[in-house]
Image (cartoon, rainbow, N blue to C red):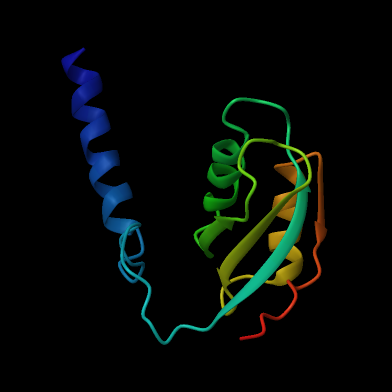
Length: 118
């Protein structure tokens, strides 16, 4: 057992030393000036108590997804509208749409909400 540890330790040290140092830590804040875009989607989610959360977690796997917000009503999984804000320099609208389609039963771009009048 001790011999295995002696062999693994140098391999681990070398692997860590070869990791790219230029990547920011996973939870580093994104600069405010980084370009962002939004995609408003109409989605049907798999029926579950945590259907929103499962969808959110699937999208947040992509570090370029900045924020997922839901429009009311919150008591159902079908016919929902979600707005996904993403870092447009790091991913594309089509990639976000594809991720949303994988995480749901149906995901299609939704029309913009009607403009509010004062």
